[in-house]
Image (cartoon, rainbow, N blue to C red; front, side, top):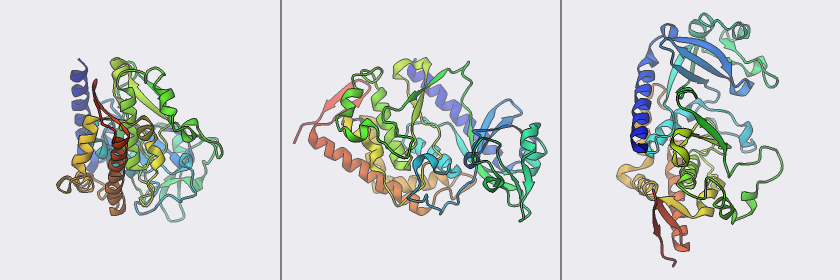
Length: 354
């Protein structure tokens, strides 16, 4: 039953991706209607788009040029949300064979003809203006950081961004959001227990739902994925309730990845280094992508070349993927010598201590 449902969801995701991808070069006017601005923060403005066939998509506009690197003094929770990071994360998720990121594609939207002239949201219409450079711009209304200097602007009307497929509604596919056991502090001071206690995973293993099943292994899949992208902002994860405790994790909200190609944030791998376990299937996939004929950067470059906004990532980011993959495998090898465990759906393989 689980495998059947998983395969059905994957096929559905591919179909949604293809549908969105087909539309990327066509005008939105016949298929889109902007319902609202969601997540109303000036720096992280997003648009909820409604398709005429009642489908929904989330549009995240470009906030950073591809070559720009997140300043080293930025905290992860105030970092920019990058549209190209959402696109690249979807492709990386498929390359890793996780299949846990909803479909995302890049596209251009005409902010005048396809948003301003079509929307029935008067609040949204009220925040449109023409910049001194004669570009059409708009911003969100909210309690903080919502001024015209944080506006999103077309050039003069075309706006680049990512379009993400919505998941089915909660009435159709109920899911819950769960705090990440390795959540980071969201203040300018202080630390979390996992940052100072190397035995933290032993405590997690005693707690439901991490004391049985594959939930903890799925967490480790997730942090390997986040380490490769450089995403430090995984404060929650979501699961479909239909599959119970053994359901896969959804890798949502990946826009804070791919910010610093010159930096590898090894603390993201804390669940791997503290719990000393990994899925056999994940390990085999990582080793495959480290081989010269299937090098991760080459596979990603080929996959991303099919996106309408190619090139999605700079060469620095692609090379960072190879470097970080090597770091994961070296970390895993060190765990081998310490007596780590490879697990895959109930099969456990103890590794001899050196």
